[in-house]
Image (cartoon, rainbow, N blue to C red; front, side):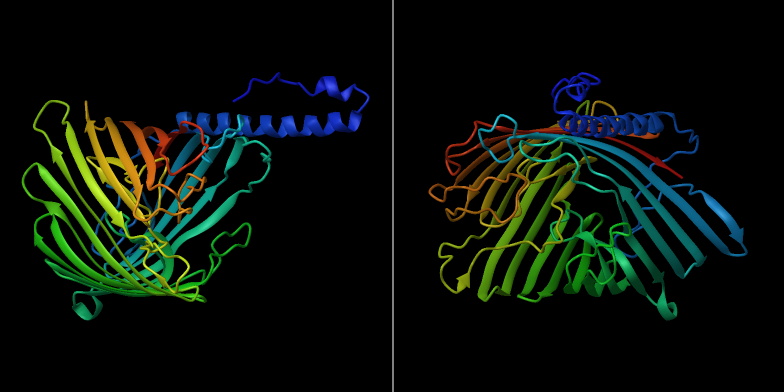
Length: 467
């Protein structure tokens, strides 16, 4: 951030170009008001009186997975009906430098995002539940990259979820969920999104089946700006078997249909324990179909391990390897590049630490990539954690494009070596607060030509949950 006088525009107001001075003054005052909003919101987080604060957790991603907070606040008891209200306040500050790997000195941006999430759950009976989630947020650009304006964002009020769920249909193991709902798998390799859907689930002690018909963009998403997602249809079928406690094996099929796209994903997922201290994850998928007139045939996978030592501060070691096939002949009618579902999040939790497991800064979609990951971490005292992660990126086929990544630069297409990244993730919780600090550094490889030696990403986040 560049230092500025409190009223630097006063010199220009009295100058010969008075109109220019007024415009400059308006710009500075807008910037100052954003900073005052940031300070005020932080003060609210630090002083809100909430003696009964607990960590509010998201509504179950799948029926039967109870992740609601303990001792919920119950309001307005009417006979056997209860309304439960929960919420979360979050302040996030993000600063990045040289994401386009260019040599422009002002290629940096600082963004402040206050966010308020409100949840309402109504339970008229043990078999029927209703849920509503609203999210208000505003991306405030405190410092813009060179040539960009700081006044380009508007507040958003998103209807994240609104559904009704019927449990134990006809006294059976089946349940039905209708409405806008969250789809999420354990590592968000497939899902981390909300869809308007009808979902039927069978769940017993060891077996679970899911069948869903969903559409993205069926109804309005942003209630302030009147926006909705682009239209897309999804058809989901999965079966999961619990091999033993904390170890599962699942097979699935997902069909994704848009105007110029028809893709089918077939895959296997497994995660669990190989011993008291060793856990693993495994994802394998094949994608086939049509996209923009080309035949698609691709393969992708991700396997990794986490080992926790029986030592003070609970140190852990982790390693993983991910692969998404590429396309060596982009000019022909066959596309052999793997791509993820478009609903993915690529976020996991290792020993209570949430992180982007393909890199906080580079954060790519697994397409035409080979990613090696190694990391270590400590928990000096719960819930404090310190994690260090290393990633090396290499293209499967040398290409001059990246399908999706936080890095906006494009490779030259003459080398497969994209570079490597080192991330630090620190998390600290105390009572009602949680503070997270993330710093990522990316060193571009020979695939990027004429670039700066490194890019930097930093993020600070404070969160308070209430009931």
